[in-house]
Length: 386
Ligand SMILES: C[S@@+](CC[C@H](N)C(=O)[O-])C[C@H]1O[C@@H](n2cnc3c(N)ncnc32)[C@H](O)[C@@H]1O
Image 1: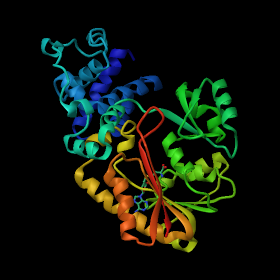
Image 2 (image 1 turned 45 degrees about the vertical axis):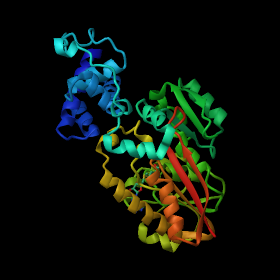
Image 3 (image 1 turned 135 degrees about the horizontal axis):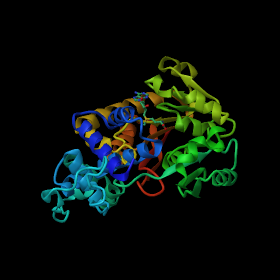
Image 4 (image 1 turned 180 degrees about the vertical axis):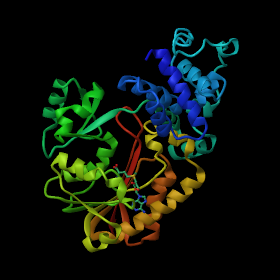
């Protein structure tokens, strides 16, 4: 596909999304009907669509509209791209710009446009992040770094970095966590590399790795909200540990056995009604469901679909998860809470509410991770019995 044809495809997908179709579904639908598109084309089209989602308000402002075409014009303008050669009507390229479209909108002054966030969440960003709100809102508009976790149960970080380099995948050390390498080139080769296929590396955000690295030692560790099991696998790379994984929706853990086998790790999956029978656990991690606002670079659609009522609902779920997980934690054990949210109401407020409700517990640790070139926004807190 030509660069222009890729833009036409992105326009088509954005128009499908305007009818209420989620981004992933719209992308899949387009790919199924476009067998001529190779993997590089699909990746490029996806990048265009996700770039728009990260900067939707700015794109609508600079493109003077909300149609797929207006949004693509706007986002390319924001990127400083010369539109003439792309919008030339040749082959499958979009038609040339009309006179109106060729007129560039005024400077971007509205904070909502600059921050590319919905209006309702802006006061929450300001209250949660103070002077850092601007930096975080800006950081959420660019692509996320790609990081891998080195499975130190099988290989050293230096050896893996070298093996990846030999496979054409360049990496750099990541300050957030010793096991993390940030991929700087050749990321598309990762999933077919020997290092990946032999379980020496897993794709995992560096802050996500740091949350697990910060957990205290314990022989029996429970990942209470395991999802795909990335954190359970990171726990299982520790020496002399038994790792248990649970999720209210066990289908989320469907890939975990294959991932564990690749990593040479053992993770025992537990249904909810088996949690108590296997308790107590020395460490219980609650990587709770949340807004995902710290990872909106990766899932930018969330910015626009998240609502105040969902936030309220999530805070209740987060409280319930912590209260139940506390009952499963050993007398001298540690309870850990984590979110990939930047919002105070899902982070510090939940930790404070937990100790306020449970006088037998105290908070012993907390850490926030910024959304930056190292990793996603995360929060974690640890609790022990008084
Ligand atoms: C943030 S995700 C977990 C991500 C995962 N730990 C990882 O590192 O990839 C939150 C998970 O919590 C699960 N969940 C939601 N409500 C829950 C509950 N009440 N008890 C346990 N898990 C729950 C969701 O199904 C979801 O998979």
